[in-house]
Length: 218
Ligand code: CTP
Ligand code: MG
Image (tube, rainbow, N blue to C red):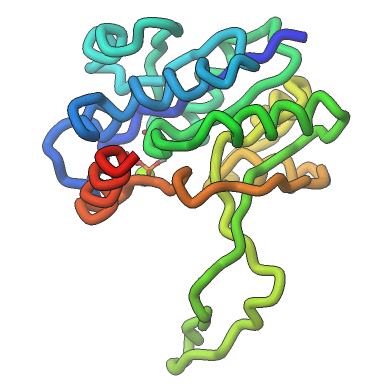
């Protein structure tokens, strides 16, 4: 069973505001994309990694990712994942893992792959939401959302490869924020495995500072 990981790393990182593509930004001296790829390979359950990079930074991405192929990405995350997926026609299992979640422990990667191998066609790591949650009403004011059972979803997300191909083929204008969202739109059931706080997404300068502190503390 061939397990291929697609790493969307083609975003510009506007909210981080580093002036270069986010995946190339270093966390304690090592680029996020490097850490993400190495973390996937360290799990021992991934056969190949395909990095999806900004079209004008292909060489830089290739230079910092020793293993893995580097292909140009698209205008949003869904398009980037689809372009990476197209490079893995022989994959049986596909993982999709944000470069920006570069400190995800290897144990999460193997748990996701194990669940797909055990027969779950769509698997996401998730952790309970810690904050109290309210939804803003369009007419003003906020309403309390019952937090019971609410989960924050992370990556890597793992899929039966054919199911993910069908989900992307059917995506059309549906711009889901993750791949499980596309699968669900097809009627697929999503299974969760325990995520890990270290798999948080580096989005803002504060997240980057927290990631640096985490690396130094480990
Ligand atoms: N991504 C991608 N192609 C895009 C947009 C995003 O491959 N066109 C990737 C990012 O590189 C990142 C992941 O999707 O690894 C999650 O996206 P996000 O954290 O939003 O990253 P950016 O889009 O780069 O950040 P921002 O939204 O702040 O610009
Ligand atoms: Mg984005």
